Length: 271
Image 1 (cartoon, rainbow, N blue to C red):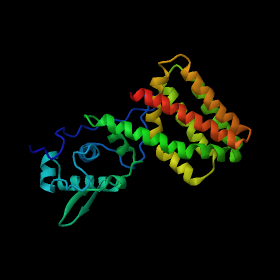
Image 2 (cartoon, rainbow, N blue to C red):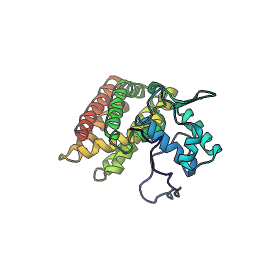
Image 3 (cartoon, rainbow, N blue to C red):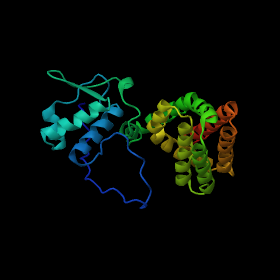
Image 4 (cartoon, helix red, strand yellow):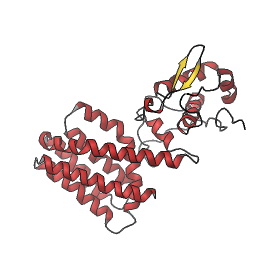
């Protein structure tokens, strides 16, 4: 049975960005490209089709005339959209060959759009999301305890102020899961910043979107048991206290415990 070349949904019309303070703030986009209009619709639909496996690694996308007809788009709009997907590592374009999906390990997994497409619609969205979140936990287990250890030896007074503010924001938001997740992200970003390592700081900004999504899901499970959110706050306070007194080993161990406890909550939420 032949399958359609792309998902049949047409690009959605562009919507205005919410004004500051109106509704829930959106997760920050770091791809450098605002997805909107005809080009944005092409990027989104083809990106989702690739990430979902509709177009497998090594497979050629439909030829240009077929895509133009599918999206009712101009040739310049289509080509610009394909350039964006190529910049995200999803495809490669070759003259006389066509546009081919690249191997999955060459995709830019830290691109916020590629991340969002792993959390999309359809039967494959759940397994994709769960696998991505588990990979994130493993990555954090490798990196964040070391970041906390460095922070304990390098944090400035300003770093400690930011960490304290993040912790206080978590304490103030125990009754609001969305606000709690944002404060949780801010605390972890502050730990990375306090490590005073340029590559760790860059990594922190790359994974901020991942952390926001992960924490939002984790805290759904935390909310189902009495005092679980309060326990999470106490665990984060141990990280802060160790960094504040300059105890690198204790900071690393406390951060490891935060991540492992978060992993248990995340797995419970995914079941």
